Amino acid sequence: MPDTKSGREKKGKDKRRQLENRLAKRELTAEDEPPEPEGIDGDLLAEDVDADADADLDA
Image (cartoon, rainbow, N blue to C red):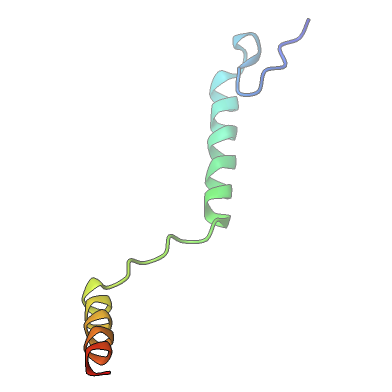
């Protein structure tokens, strides 16, 4: 019965080549993914909240 589990090297043959192929595929898919979003500047958010709070107090 053949080994059908994904990620397992078949009978120990060509382990290095199989691992290199798997890493190459992983690198290709990583390049296709969008970059991580940049963080939001907390100072700008705090100023916006303070401005809204002052406007609510004036009303």
